[in-house]
Amino acid sequence: MRGVIRIKSNDQRPVVGVFLHNALLNQLWSPYKKSDALFRLFYLDQAAKQTGTPLYFFSIYDVNFAARRIKGTYFNDRTRRWERKMFPLPDVLFDRCGGLTGKEWLRAKRIRQFFSSLQVKKLNALHNFDKWDTYRVLHADEGLRQHLPATRLYRNQQDMKSLLEAGDKVYLKAVTGNRGKKVMCVEKLPRGRYKYSYYHNRLVVGKCRNLKQCRERIRSFFRGRTCIVQQAIPLLQIDHCLVDMRAEVQRSGQNNLEIVGICVRVGQRYSPITIHSQSYPFEVFFRHFLRYGEAEIQNLRTRVEAFLVKVYQCIERQYGPFGEIGIDFGIDREGGIWFIECNAKSAKVSLKKAYDRYTLIRAFLNPFEYARYIHTQHETN
Figure (tube, rainbow, N blue to C red):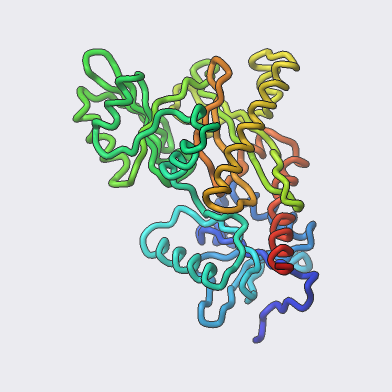
């Protein structure tokens, strides 16, 4: 077939295909404003070349099912341009496609089923996490139960009311979704009133006269999406800014767990989530903002790392192997560690803000080294 890149020797494997939202891929050729997310494509390309791993990017519109070929996008070092060619199916799928709805979502589902039927190896066992299912998996582990806030599947106002009776604030979250797009905070006020807040391009705050009116606001915001309701974690705060953390946990080329970085995110004032946050390395934050001593920092880091490893291993026991998981968690005023959520498609924005270039490069190299590991294991079995 003309124009197809042939994989001739075992040294040129595994071929890694990165599955992306078509809007992001199209920005590579757009003359207009480009997304900040494009930095990931450049780092992935450089990491693939550094590990000697053939790489291409593709969207839902690039898969030829009948020919078993993909019209992939790759960076041509000779011409210094992004170009497109026909590629074979990947040996390892790096699924970073999200945010699709309707027919596009159905096509993505078909592509994933197509790859599964051909036993294409996946970097991550899941392409996204269901928050309710994840909660139940972690809650079944006795060692992790203490790190979980009280959580219910939201079916009616009684589910929220029961948690508000135990505390003054809850969070409602769509079971799927990221970047805080479908998260609402509800607080109990005097005289049976309630305050709600969420972030949608800007901070939105409103009040309700009663629980019934609050239910209508929730229904309008989530538009029929399945949600959980959680008791609010008493997170650390600095000047009315919430503080939470994102840990980048990955498997290396030797299949060992590596905590590449723990980013402390300080949100905007009064925002219910830490979107558009400032980000700092773990040690820097506790040393300079909270004035912890070195022994205190080391003790806390040891406890946090043990918690992260437990979460990662518990997730893998239930769903299968993962090359990387972004784990969000919080620390309360007493030093307690609280699980928030897992991310199968970590954007690494906080890592880019907080850490040096070497650390960021390490976070992009690990997935390709792990891809080589799982491909080798598959070939020898």
